Length: 113
Image 1 (cartoon, rainbow, N blue to C red):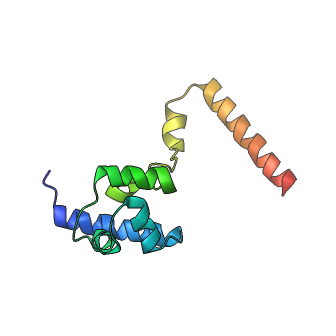
Image 2 (image 1 turned 90 degrees about the vertical axis):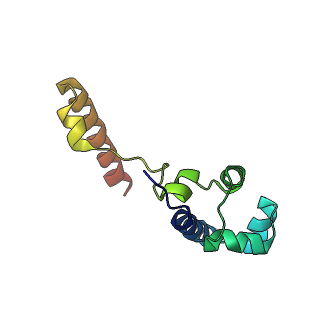
Image 3 (image 1 turned 60 degrees about the horizontal axis):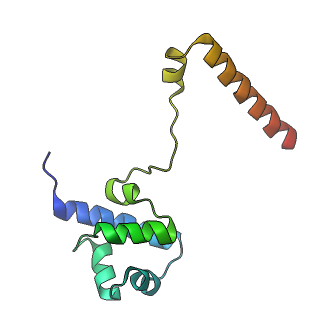
C-alpha cells in the first residue's frame, strides 16, 4: 500500500485544526505547548509539513488528543459493539446475562428520567 504523504499531511492537519477549535485552544497556546513557532504550527494545520510522533504524544499527554484519530480519522476511544456478532457467537447463558444487564440499565434510565 503506497501512502501519499502530502495528502496524509493535509488530512492530519485538518483533524488537528478541528481538534484545536473544538477544544478552544489558541494557536499561540498549542504552539507553545509543542515547543514550536506559531508559523510552524500553522504549517502543520495546513498540511504543508507533517507532525512528528513526539508532538503527537505531547498533544495526547496535554489535551487527551487521540493520536489514532489525528493520523487515521478513526477515533480509537469510541467503543463499538456489534450486537449481531455477539448474539451469533455467544452462549445462551451469555446472551441472557447481557440482555438482563441491558434491561436493568434501561430500567434505571427510565426510573431516573
